[in-house]
Image (cartoon, rainbow, N blue to C red; front, top):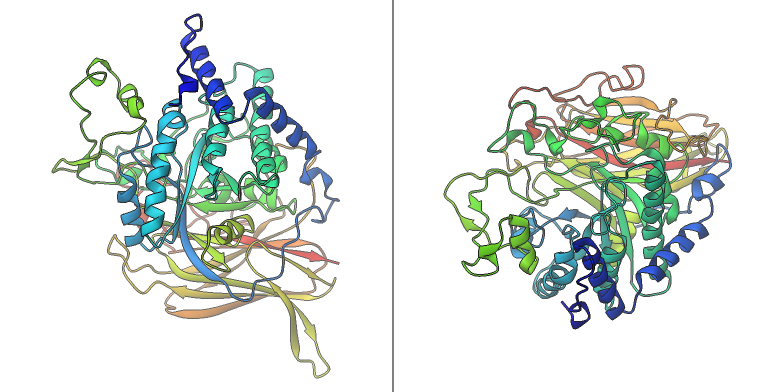
Length: 580
């Protein structure tokens, strides 16, 4: 902690003293809390009514235009949500996570330690020094980020590109805008909720301002496990995105902690992602109780065809999904948390959190000789993000995430998934010709009445995963719906015209193969997204068989029902088609 934080105000209560220390720390970084809050609020207001409110009905003109498909894409595997001993509830060293990531074929990952005063004061700098050393000796792209307690809402991954001032910007963001540090977690009433919501939007807008002013190279924000507690309302998610669509780009389509139901101390009813909650007073009241459970291991917002994710896509606006490990404690690992020194101040501290807070880190793990508690799989072991990049760099990975060039899978279901969407024309000899093409996250302009072809190039996995299973792709779903423009109700979470338009049987197919589908005589703007599974657990989706005849299902409540390896899916981000 810097000397600027050493002055203590005995007249303040503990919470007020922490804020006073944080204010002094901000001053040492060249910031003021009041100035940052004001700047963020002005930047959020400068976004106007948001991109969704500016789009003309039925069109996607307000969405940022993306170039046609880059000619050469390389697919890098990543994970944007990983914890270490620098989080108060995680167990492993940075090098442990990086060793595992490389073992499971990860190319990039982001360390997102929990926000906390001890993290802001010591852990952020100490872990940052270690990350700098690891970058120098490993062939990995290593981001330093933060798991942000979003004011009045759930958590979010904040990811910054490495740079000269990135650590100071991350530290200032944590101290000024974190909901936990500032006591903005459980609003007492609607007025307080609205006030804290505004601060969340201001935080995102402030990050965007830092990027525009050149203080940081780049920043991204993604909403984490949005339906775990039901406190991320639809209007909040839209407001975050509208605060700066260049910064707030999506959400976890599937939570981490996928091994919760098969962990050492698993109980009947445990679910993947630790999604075992019920509505609480600050939950969004319109969420059904089924939404608090995973569907095929994915969040209800993503897994429901015609649901919340589709409601946002139907506005014609980019909003992407990811998957990740959220790694804290490895399933059935035999290492335990290490021992704190047998000295003061540790001997006088009763709680694990207080002992962790002395240095902002836990001791290194030690071997226990028997399986420990844990719900997580190593980065890249079970959940993977595949990002389509133009080169192997931090900027290219962030551009791929921002541009939606991502697909995700569980259990190594696929090795490759590439998408091309093109308009078809008829030549003199009635031959079919193609024009420009778009890929995941892209936009394609076509003429009214033109045919549009979707081409999928799929490569199956030819090796067993870490559970000893050779993955099998049973089918691929094409999910499509019209782009209907902005919604009148910011809490809308239904896209009633979106449905599975085709299911393609892939059972028995191995290696690399191509699938095609043609949308004939297109008359209106639409989007198409993609999904597939091993076929082990299928049934009518949440909105019924007419919308989703063979969709993911909730796991049961018997012990062992939530084995993640026996119910694996892949999901891909959409392509938008604009009809002129």
